[in-house]
Length: 242
Image (cartoon, rainbow, N blue to C red; front, top):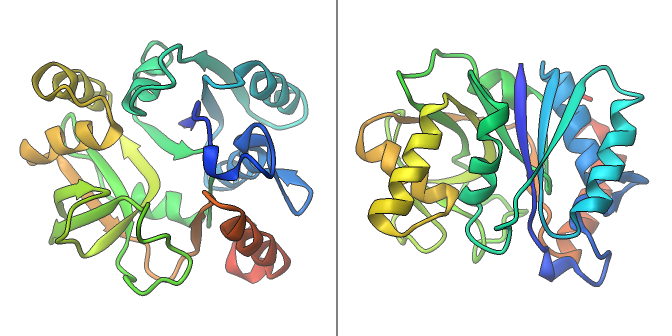
């Protein structure tokens, strides 16, 4: 089972903590290592790490991990890391030929979310997003989080700026390679190279589903304040199954 981890961004809001967000430490372990270890616990055995900003530092770190963890790790460079994050997904296309997860290098999550998002078969050329319906989740940065409007198990709208929404994007996806075609179509037709743009293309075709993570824990570490929350979480390991 394969996962693509997006680790190409600059992480400007957490620059005071470290020059490269994926290797910022949470209780002594780099963020990207925590993501990889959680994914391993969730059944992933192959990783594609998409790097960009400060990429050589991240590549060196994960290549060392590949020597000690029971998995394979391939690095894919995204020279367009300063553009939309859909460009990072497309950078993984040559390394992906079947269903795969997309994960974020700065999201810590309960590994059981991976089992939840894979529970049902994917639609042909479709994808699924794990969402959090807890709109009062205190650890969500409401101004920055990607918001989702769903109807039953289908995504109707997604984006940071939408005003009607009933869930949050947790950053955990289960996809077919059809997502690559949707991203390419979003770029050509809408001049939108964000991952959300590709999701909107799939949603318009009725191929983008979602699933509820229930009470499972996750956090997007975008600021020093959220990093402090994550450090507290790692002390209370009961929030996670690893």
